[in-house]
Length: 519
Ligand code: NOJ
Ligand code: CA
Image (cartoon, rainbow, N blue to C red):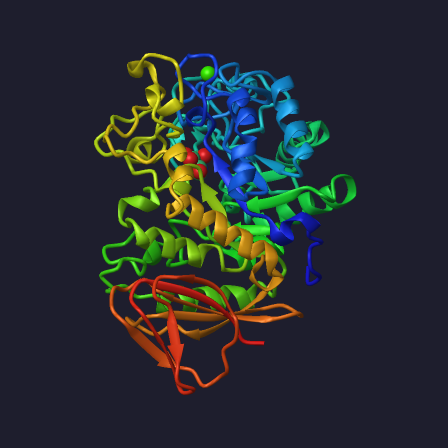
């Protein structure tokens, strides 16, 4: 597929806000966030400047993996509300010109899903081939974990992630065992059609698209991704036909592949080859003021992906997500502001993880909740204000979904709104500047000007037909310089003491970020 996938127009300047529904706002005092809570805060999200929401799974589930173990794809989990509440969330968002994408989990279900209960039966039925089964309980699927010994059916069922998440069957790239099917076989085709029905269901209700969980691993034994790309091209044809405005973003981490598959956007992830972790989360992150980081490999990989993906879609850099440590675990104060100057001036649609806009901390030492394990500390309830439970819930403290940051100085939205120098206001300002300059938005070009091995600053030019903007980012506490002999013009954004130019080089002060027009 060489031609470019048509992009919904609203992605051009979209800024996403990721909401982990159980931790956002509880409105019925059961200690767990709900859809009504999200609806009540839409104005806050809009005030920050975000234009779209990615909602983590909120479907009926036994919650062994916080909802990534789906029991009924077409039903909102009662703890979050009803399908009518979801329809209302879509409506209320659209009324504000905002969009909502849901989390689609096509790779596996919960063991309690009706499909799996049917699939476990010894007698053949409609769901026999819905999951990846070997044909003898003593044979395990190689390279994958499995569930066995819990069904009358003689076989082992492959799992996709945790051992309670049986893998849905989309076939094998090159089947070489009798029990392995090909993507074109009736079982895998029926699985894909069932998943299209799920998408249809929510898109018809008003949903604006999906973030797709583990999108790159649906077809098995498919090292180069060719089978899975083909699968997604099939989905692309379906969407083009029925829902051309639905936005699709993949958890894949290899944009050259996912964009070929017809996704509009792919994430840089905490795993895989992107060097994303070098930015904010390794031993010496580039964005630490210690200034001992290395941005070169990140930029090198980014460039390679950018070229390979031929601008078929967007490469999205998240501030964080529900699977990795909070941004504020390694960075503090001005470091966070400079990190956001980068995140909000890069191409692709930025994704802000709820709470990162106020620098919410990773809560250390928590016992795992719903399969979170070390991820639990990044999933604690939103801190709204200085009232009980930081305004998250009226439930007794011990009943909260996850315990909150107990520090007396924990950041809250209310306090940050009142402080003109807060991280919240810096982000708000950065989004406003992005919105005013197409060159800084999703599709503006990027050309790196300075991104050297173990050196500071980072400099790049963003450009559109109208203008060119030089972005210079120096997270290090020391003054640094780089060769630059071009003219510089109006300063559009400055954090810190800023920069100067002598016609041959640019000198930038410690902990500064500057966006300056160059044409
Ligand atoms: C990725 C999701 O983001 C994560 O939270 C989940 O546990 C796994 N996929 C399995 O669905
Ligand atoms: Ca609730």
